[in-house]
Image 1 (cartoon, rainbow, N blue to C red):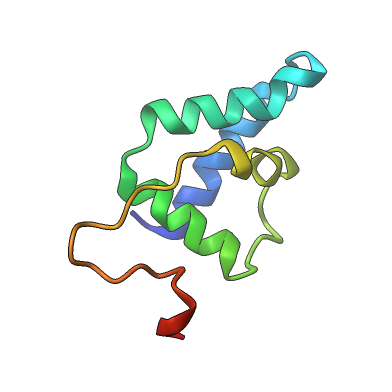
Image 2 (cartoon, rainbow, N blue to C red):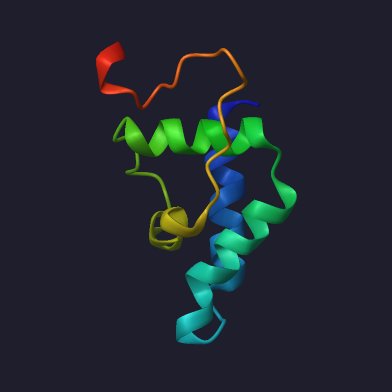
Length: 86
């Protein structure tokens, strides 16, 4: 999926949850992304955040990142977070 569209979609989800109760906002964003985004989309979102390109992301998306499930790397694929691969 085009990465700018991915950010647009995440931001739209965050805008929807802006009106939720204070404690439910970022949880709502994370729950929605976990339920409805395929692993490839979540992987791209993590890559975007980890690369530091977050200036165009809604603060609720960034707040929700800790509760968004990171897809597992396919068996046999290198783990991108492994420091020995750097």
